[in-house]
Amino acid sequence: MSENESKSFVEKLNNAVERNNSLLCVGLDPDPVNYLAHFPKTIDTEALIAWGTGIIEKTADLVCCYKPNFAFYEQFGPSGLEALRQTIAAVPHDIPVLLDAKRGDIGSTAVAYARAAFEVWGADAITVSPYLGKDGIAPFLEYPGKMVFILVYTSNPSAKDIQEFTGEKLQLYEYIVQQAQSWGSHNQIGFVVGATQPQILTHIRSLMPNHPHWILAPGVGAQGGNLQATLLDGLDDNGSGMIIPVSRSVIYAKAPQASALSLRGEINQVRQRIKLTHRITLLQNELIQQLYEIGCIQFGEFTLASGEQSPIYFDLQRLSVDPLFLKMAALAYTDLLKPLRFDHLAAVPYAALTIGTAVALSTNSSLIYPHKEPKMHGMDRVVEGVFSPGERATVIAGLITTGGSVMKAVKTLETAGLTVSDIVVLIDREQGGRPFLAEKGYQVHAALRLSEILDVLQESGQITGTQVVTVRNYIKENSI
Image 1 (cartoon, one colour):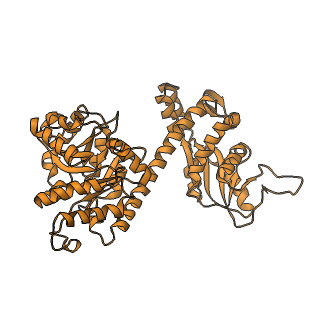
Image 2 (cartoon, rainbow, N blue to C red; image 1 turned 90 degrees about the horizontal axis):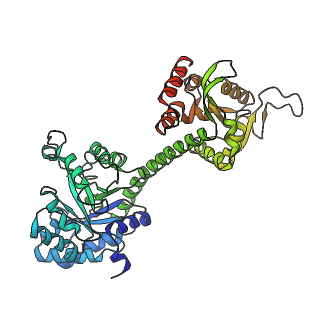
Image 3 (cartoon, rainbow, N blue to C red; image 1 turned 180 degrees about the vertical axis):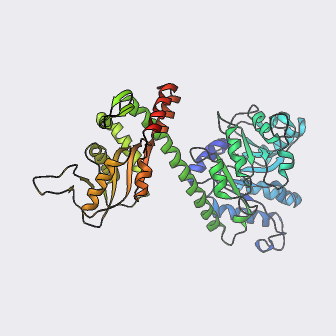
């Protein structure tokens, strides 16, 4: 037995997902009745094997898994079953095979089903019905490294008539998800959830808070499931955790390879969005914790430059206390800058000059800055740096309160002939600066909002509920 053959379903799956950069699973459903043009006139073992291996050869570098449907082979009797065995054997050993058989029985019958799936057909995983409870699942779990995908919420129209049956507290599908998690680990048990009901995917994800299980989500394509909605509602925070099986849209396409490539691309676009969102969230939480720990965020009684008393104070000059932390803050700006168009970064003097320099280095961008007051010597420039009139500048500021100081910097830049439409800040104090600037045609992009900072610090126990209420009341009373 080779090293790949001895690996578990999950090991093969994770490796294939990473190697092929794919969550796409191609279903192998030979259907010469409805797709006659794709098959020879005589349907025998050799014809079925040739059809299946042809699909595999065209798509093996684009998929994470193959899903042969037992019924489509069984309909041809012994010749079909022999074709199934040889087709599964033809799948590269580093790609897992999920046999779609929907087995469901107990006792010696379930044992026989398990033996057939894993010892005779050579599958790595199988779909099963949970109707008979744990007794119908346990024999499959006796095989180390194999996986069982339990039918939870299917994609057919009348599924809700049964699967949404409501007991005293839970609907049937909810109860199945909760019970099944006690039958085996997340490496043994996955769930089948139809892509035609994406909102159900979100709910099912919430029912497995400790160890998210893999979800097989059929229904995209011919059955009408929306691919983007399915992914947004079902993927985990790392843009994974789902197998997207597609059959007819690939195997009966004029160019199966091109169709699989296109679908993989669509899936990966959504995965990247989710990964970026998760990365930004993790970065934001870490950034808030660090800002508090090094004293950039302080709570107490402070007198601001305006003479007002404030229960919160931001000292962003402390950002440079640690080069690694300064780099983390620069990354927060970098994420916000990615979709923006600009020729230069313009740092608001003088607090934002340090962070502006770090961001310019992180993004490989030109940095300029407006003077805070008229310069009475040298070249008498109002804006320092090399630029040309008509070029676009994105303003970098530490925080925004009412927007007055930022607006002053913007006007200086515009006086020098630069165009400004975007302002990027680390913190929005949420005291009216964003809508004030929006009215004047400038869009503010903030890495952190004060309300988010309060939530994170309260949840971590670093500030009290009383402090949160005090700050929220202050902001409410002192906003423009």
